[in-house]
Length: 313
Ligand SMILES: NC(=O)c1ccc[n+]([C@@H]2O[C@H](COP(=O)([O-])OP(=O)(O)OC[C@H]3O[C@@H](n4cnc5c(N)ncnc54)[C@H](OP(=O)(O)O)[C@@H]3O)[C@@H](O)[C@H]2O)c1
Image (cartoon, rainbow, N blue to C red):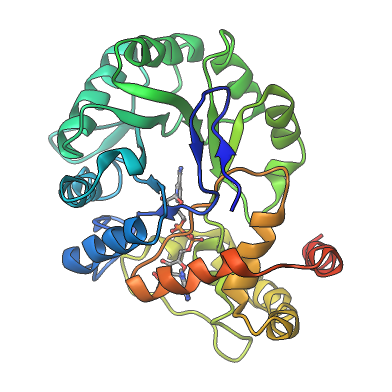
């Protein structure tokens, strides 16, 4: 597939990446297996996936450590490593947001160690804090870029005004925010602005954390184990769940025209969408990842692209 340019940098990347909050993210999901997680990352690299999206917050550094182990056995330069920081953990385990230059600088250094690398391709401020002027926070990352520690600067979970403030000096290359067919708020105001400014948009939770894979139906609604953070997501709340699953059901006949799964159809829709950047679906197993890769060869017709858009309008 044609590569995508990252922001205003010279970096380019394959449009289909990998999200890794289920690789070492034991604080967000129960029953994760480290060996399986590492296999997912190795399979991704073997299959030519470049962008691997992680964060300190996925297992409080454990996801980065597992990815670091796999990177050691591979050609580091083939991978676009994206990580995030901003969460400060107190000795009692409580988490606060910190975007100060000192904290971000320390976060980058600690991520480099856990990932066993001397540069990050992308570092995102994971969430905005209340107090730090955003251009000052991004300015600290720009100094780290000049020092060769990172190649592209991103912000995540920033609204339009916060992005404008963060990009006051033109240093922001990417914004990673929630966006999927069921949650399209980002494309109303934020994404048109990003396109205009040549800032890449990386949508997270492309499957709405599994709802858009088509594995549920009105008769078979999801039941998550205790400790799964999806229990807190609005889309999964009892008053919204059935309506959401019913919309996803409408994708099944379209998917079968292509002999594809709903998950593959949904990914193909994002890959055809001209306003979004790299897509980073999460995968728990190598099998899910391999299935998702099939979406690269699904040639979605213009009329089916529009039909899907209308189902979720
Ligand atoms: N910046 C941020 O604040 C932020 C927030 C959230 C996520 N993210 C990033 O975005 C990435 C993607 O989001 P996400 O992983 O939370 O959600 P997602 O990509 O919407 O959904 C991933 C889940 O869908 C299911 N799945 C994936 N492939 C499948 C297949 N082929 N068949 C059936 N089920 C399949 C799996 O669920 P099961 O695990 O139940 O099998 C998998 O864990 C994350 O991994 C993370 O890197 C960033």
